[in-house]
Length: 436
Image (tube, rainbow, N blue to C red; front, side, top):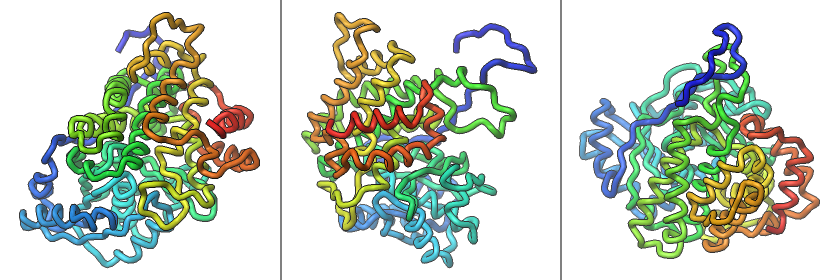
C-alpha cells in the first residue's frame, strides 16, 4: 500500500482503513472427497446438506452425503433449493426444517444453493425473525445478524457467484419485483471447498451465464469507487463490507479477469475441457474474494430489477418451471453501457481490465479508449451465446421506469459506483442496453 500524506488523527478527510475478509479455501480436482475430513475436523457430528433437485438427480448430493457419513457424521438432505431463491422460498424451507438440529451446514450447488444454506443457517439459528428484517435498506430493515451462526462449508458446482467466498446473499423479494441482498460478516462460510470437477456437468448456457457473473464481479470491483475516496466512517461498526476498490481486492480482481479472458470461451464451447473448468473455478473464487470486499456497482444494481420484474422469459439450459433471468445474464446485459458511463473516472483501470481480458491496446490512448472495455465484454458475450440486450428477456422501453425504480433501491451497490448515479443516468444505461 502506498504511503499517504499525514492527515489529522481526529479529522481525516477520507477513509484510510482497508478491511478484507475471506474464508479458508481448499481448491483442486477431487477436493470434494475431503469434505468429511473437514467437517470432522471442526467437530461436526450432524449436518444439513442443502442442494437442488438437479444435483440430486445426477447423484452428486448422495455421493457427498456418503463421504460425510464415512466420518461418522449424520447427514440430513434438503434438495429443493430454488434457482434464484427468494425471501419466500427461504422462509418456507426454514419452516419445513424448523425441528431439525444440526452442528453444521453444507451448501452444495450454485450460488442459489449456497445462499439458501446461508439463509437456513440464519433463520434456524434465530427463529421467529423474518427475512425482511435483515434485507438491505431501503427494501428491508437492514438489521444485523444478532449473534454467531453455525459452521458452513460451501461446495460450489458452478463457476459463477463466488458465494463460497462472500459474506452476503442475494434474494428475490416477493411482491416487489426486485432482488436485494443481506451483507453481514457472520454469513461468511467457514470453508470454501472448490472442486472444478463438480462443474463438468454444467450445460453450456449455464456455464456462460455463471461466467458472466464472474466477469462483472471482477470488472465492477476493479472499477469501484476507491476506499480512500470515501468519507471516513463514524465508527468501526459503521464500515461496510463493500469498502470500494483497494490494493488487496485489486490483486484478486486482476487475476480473475486474466483467467476469464483465457478460459470462459473454452469452458462454454468445450464443456469437457478440465483445464478451462479449473481456470474458471479459480476465477469465480478469486472474483468472490475481490468483490466480496470491494463491492459491485451499476451492473448488479440494474440486474436485480431485471431479474425481479421478468414476466415470461425461460432461460435455455436451466431446469425451471417459472419465468427467470439467470443472474449472470441479467448482470452482463447492462455491463457495456455501465462501463462506458464510468470510464471517465479512471480510464487506466478500464483499459487495464480490457487488456487482462485479452484486448489489444496498441494505438489506444486514454482519450480514445472509452469503447474498448465495452467492446471486449460484448465480444465475449457474443462468442458464448449470451444476451444481446434486455430485449432478449422480453423488456421494452415501456419497462424503463420500473427498472430504474428497482435499480435506485440498490443504494448499497450504487454508493460503490466511482461517479454519482442519478435516475436519469440509470435510464440512459438501461435504454442503451435494451437492444444490445
